[in-house]
Length: 423
Ligand code: IMP
Image 1: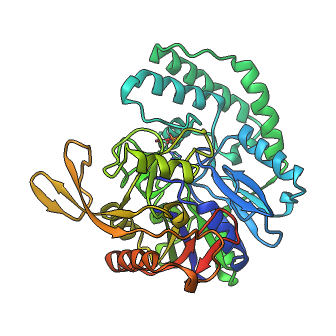
Image 2 (image 1 turned 60 degrees about the vertical axis):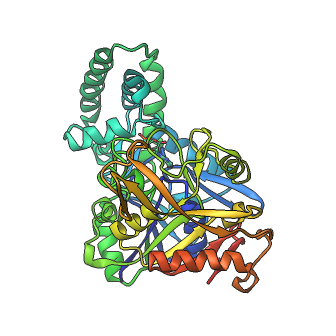
């Protein structure tokens, strides 16, 4: 059976956690394939909010298996906190959570290096979540990393020490003021490693292969968004993994011809956290309203998100890079009450009108061309059927479907599982 993918198409925070949770009943296995605790996947059900960082969003469903794939980077300390929260809610994760031996570990010194690197950049900083993501992936590609499977070896602590010593020298090299007590950090780290080791480690590519062979349904859950992809995002203001469809192949060991549906998630407007270009960003009351009504604060860092109109140039690009087969539009409810809505349909770039995403979208290179549409007044949050959606919203959806040449199958009208309209 083919593996379906679920991917964010913007700069992250599209609402992937909610949709995975909604779709989980259709799948036997939910698998994360990249990123780490920089992600914050929010799920709301039974009146309660749950935030997951590294653990797949299927964990609240008793019947689904949840796999942390080889492409993910794991901070054992944050992972342990997530497990503690699940235990408080009586989630029996031991039976349903599996971890790839090939996933890399985030060491305390990776986090310190992240902080030192950002501090040294001054105004040019990436706006990283400072979870150690970049330094960990650097050690992975530099062939110095420590993997989950290493913790099963007798001499792994020697390897750890050598790498941590090297990191300390690198932190000194940055020549910035980073205060830390490594002994204290290591105490928490090794305690958390023991907890991690009490879980089930597997050779995950073999597990996925056998699961496909025996007809199990699998959903690969992406983190961050396509515009934060290390290759196709707004480099260098990106994360350090492939957030696009190809990342699911390398992050789980799935062959490209085994991919089925590619669900692409986008917000009805656009948000971004951290630094980097954002052509449709708003600095006015409209942007402020989107942020306030949409509760646009990072689930991991609490930082307020930058807000702006929907950018179809960027969205079309994301659909192409990922081969999206179905779209899901989130947070349409946040746009209720806007008299008119703008949609970016082209850029003015170096004197030309273009509809593809160019190499450089820094503000000095790009002017945005908008199409304007009528807004809707109705509160969408209690609606349950597509037939209840206001005409102006249907016009907005029709316009997007035509431009993106892809059907919008789900319209989300609130954070709760139940606030989901299937079309
Ligand atoms: P890092 O991955 O923590 O190094 O952060 C790199 C950039 O990606 C920063 O601009 C972050 O704000 C952004 N970023 C990382 N993870 C997420 C996410 O899950 N949602 C939204 N933005 C993210």
